[in-house]
Length: 283
Image (tube, rainbow, N blue to C red; front, side, top):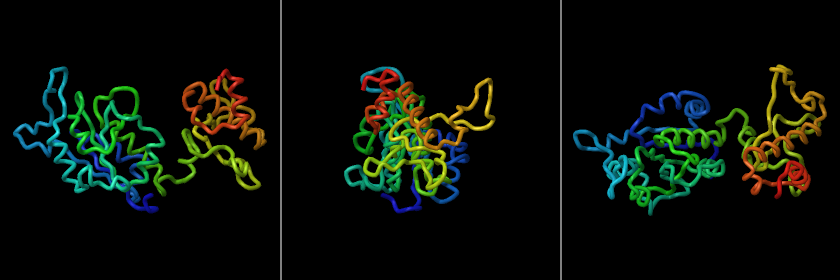
């Protein structure tokens, strides 16, 4: 794991460097960069193409639609970063990642892995893809941000950076924000002690309750009534045990409705399972 409050570096290799101007100037990434917790360097792939037209793509062998990013500019771009070849790279400290629709799915667990590194190089694919030898020779892994096709890897790179940076110590104003949320690791109770997460000694529940791998529960704020819908009464009555129970049940229900696949890996109590079966879950 990286030392606390050290700088994590992202290197972005792209044919559209200006794409990231706005993304890096707002929100969590802006604060992380301003605080010295994250460093971002953008590298124009065309700067590593040496013909008159700065060509970075060519037609695919075997025929087919579209163009493919050539291996030489990408290899030179990665080589210029001084991180060593794939076989000699310290993958516990730094990784080169190809962003493509053919990659493994990027998840919150992946973001946690990346947050433990010191340096991440993101190769933004374009056109019909990248010459596969780039993947084989240069990249430690290949990631996709979802089961759909983007026009390029720049949007995916922004997602990876944001999801990873917010997990770094010191980036968020409240460290618990990255622990108690959708896909969070903490469960509502400790299996060993029975302690309820999301409580304060002698006081009301914290704003969040550990998800234990589930989606987050619904949130409400003022006004108490909007569009003919009132805030659920349980949230206004001051019964902290009832609030915790309501939040857990709503998280279970939302996960069952929207992402039932997550239930297989979630930490579920006997009460959770009974509640889900009441909804129609067959697990």
